[in-house]
Image (cartoon, rainbow, N blue to C red; front, side, top):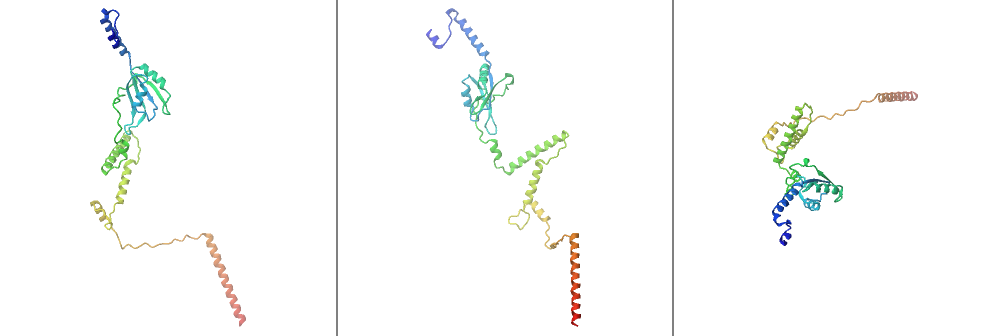
Length: 271
């Protein structure tokens, strides 16, 4: 009896019915386990400082947690601010949603709600049992790194192919929309690079590729070209200016005639 009490085993009052009693006890335990249906709680507006271990330790005070998933960005690895917690009992999940909704945590009011069983996706908790590992080379650092000529060529090809597919889809739908797009930028950059290339043989570091040599042969330099003369264009005088100039010339002529008459009179008086 003492060993059975210490082990926590239930015993029948009649020892002869103990075997049947134990069968009934097992059936009741199976019913209890089968009666429990798990419930999923959505937790949103979480602080960035909370990770999976902190969330598990906090929400485990309400009941047993089967699975927990904190949504993270695949590019940067940072938390998106929401997650899902699955409890072993749906009643516990309802209590958690009612208690923790609009609860102040880390200067934020977190939002909690029960997710209906029919809306729980089968792949919602895929990979939730694995420990999160921060990406060694996130997408942002991969994008911002220095790209070589081959990488730039691949990126340019991808962008051009996407743009051509977009133009085809627009044409199939009957949309007449013309835009320069990335192809025009690539062409302009190529023209600038060609313009920057030196084709003069007298430069310190001339480029001697076959295409540049052909362009160099096509260039004709004429040293005997005469310099163009500089022509100064005087604006025409207005009608008012012309009349003023005519009046000035008439006054000058009258003055000259008056001076000549005075000289003649002076000569006559002397005689």
